[in-house]
Image (cartoon, rainbow over the protein chains, first blue to last red):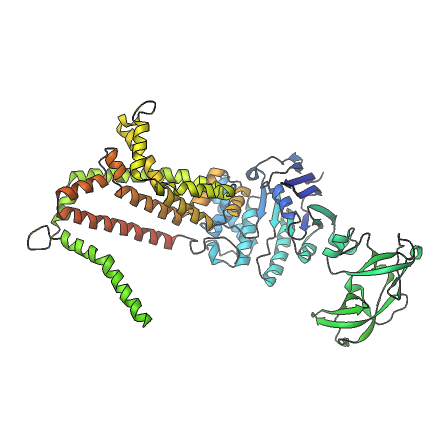
Amino acid sequence: MPFLEIEHLHKQFGTLNAVADFNLQMHKGEFVSLLGSSGCGKTTALRMIAGFEAPTGGIIRLNGRDVSRVPANRRHIGMVFQSYALFPNMNVADNIGFGLKIKGQPAAAIQAKVHELLALIQLPDKGRSYPYQLSGGQQQRVALARALAIEPQVLLLDEPLSALDAKTRVELRQEIRDIQKKLNMTTIYVTHDQEEAMSLSDRVVVMNKGVIEQIGTPFAIYNYPKTAFTASFVGQLNVLPVTVTDGAAGECRFYDQPLKLKEAFAAANQSTATIALRPEELRLGQQDGHNHLTGIVENNTFLGAIIRLRLRVEQTTLLADLFNERQMVIPRDGETITINFPPHACWILDNQLN
Amino acid sequence: MKFKWAWVWIILGIVYFFLPLVATINFSLKAERGRYSFRAYQIVLQDPQFISSFTLSIQIALLTIVFSLLLIVPTVYWAHLRLPQVRPILEFIAFLPFVLPAVVLVFGLIRIYSGPPFALFNRAWGTNLIMVGAYMALALPYMYRSVDTGLRAIDVRTLTEAAQSLGASWPVILWRVIFPNLRTALLSGAFLTFAIVIGEYTIAAFLGRFTFGPYLALLVRNRAYEPAALSILSFAITWSIMGLIQWLTYRAPGSTQVAAGPR
């Protein structure tokens, strides 16, 4: 039986459908991210699970019990906010112990738990500090410990790393994942950062305009996007307008350069179609059995492990991410080069992308 | 040139504000002919009428503060949290006492509460109750403004939700999270209310309660040096309360960062 079940969850603000027909099942200890741009309904969905918003329709079942109408303070769901939301009038230890104090636990038990959590978040000697004396990353660690102190059934994180600098963000996200695994905590994580969602989650829920576009493992979402939105939102994507030459054989033309795909076109011969290709599938030079394209280098960006080329083929700009090698000769701007990619690297987009 | 004129204005300002104060202090010390003494202060402090009227005023002021806080904090908090659209209406109501003279207020009160069904003036506690209500109205603009400013400075919604997710009920959220984070705002609101009630004359006089305001008026009519001494005493009390608020604000934990926001 799933630990958390969400069925046909729906939220309407006036005429706006903030969340429509949201369905998700999670097993205990799973880490799921809700990924989407701002206004896609991911935070609204999270707030309904937390109990801060009343759903217009649908059911949220936690451990077999319908909690859709249970007030937030009785749901036993932990929450971490983007703005940390530590109580400014309390020191770190009191912040962490707040939930336990409300439950009426004995002081000794609270102290022991606070001690344990401070060790877990690697701030063992900060118990007496006040929130304003801590850095952003430390404050968010304390907020995490505070949410975990009540041993919630589910932990919700609403863009917890958005307010932090890049380095802290990467460090803390790994820590969050480690702690989550250690405690086997069922966790929902809201983010607009695809890298964060990919690197943390067991499964990712891609949302757009209040609707779930796709649910799947990061690998599946990235490599087998089911909708045009997912394909374009997750990762970089080259979109090639082509003319079908032999649909059944998967053959087409990109301007006047022939391409062969592994899958067949549904579209008729001589009609137009759109195919997609990840930048990292492209290689320099010729290779037998691969597709080849010739184009002019517009510019190259050195990103360390990766060199990103911007290539112009007729009116279309393509991105190619090449792995850095020390002996490599980087194509110069304006140079005409040939790139190759295997037939299985491209897929046909079912509808037109913008 | 500009700089020189600035100094002239500053000095003029100091003279304007402090000269009357110095003169009053000087006068209040001259109760005995030919030498400076604290005679006037002694007389005032030993006057049983001073003690009874001042105690009554303090009691009424404290009741006004408590009831104002109980009424205003939850109301403004709720408006911030759930009903932002009613905030302009609340603001309008809160400023009404400014355009309503105390005389008008007190006559209205007398008309309504002197006969059945609300004949509250028959008893001292009834009159005190009405006074507290009237003072709550007079202090409303100041109290509202303080609480509103205090709530603007903290992230009310997120703090509330954080407390809710940790299992806190509404009374717990108000008492443990909202009130402590409004400490400075509540103190300044309370202080302003205190100052208004202590010095109030019109309502107390018309309702026939001998509080500090009517006592001071009586003293001014009958004595020379004692009113001056009393003015200086009120000054001292006011300034010490202000100092106390400053001190409490300064040492309040977390007060240097009121908003728990990202940085």
